[in-house]
Figure (cartoon, rainbow, N blue to C red):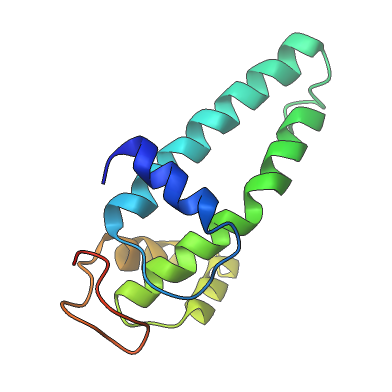
Length: 122
């Protein structure tokens, strides 16, 4: 899946937590989030509304707008490895939870259909 296809796919499934997401879709969208976050921070700084390095209104709006699709694609990515989206709660455990979620995001998806639907590769 290419970068534009991944962005289009995630944003078209804005708050869809059902189904599965390929690794490429998840990681391309993660890169998109990083790039958009950088642009939003630069805009906040250029407008002089950066609140002591913690972001400004542009960053806040971007983060709020992309929160649901980020959670949805992460849940669908977990579904691809046959885990429920509730595993995302590990993000509240500093360091250890993040490492576990990173390992999950890097794993190959379950070949063929699983309890969350057919394989997104086919």
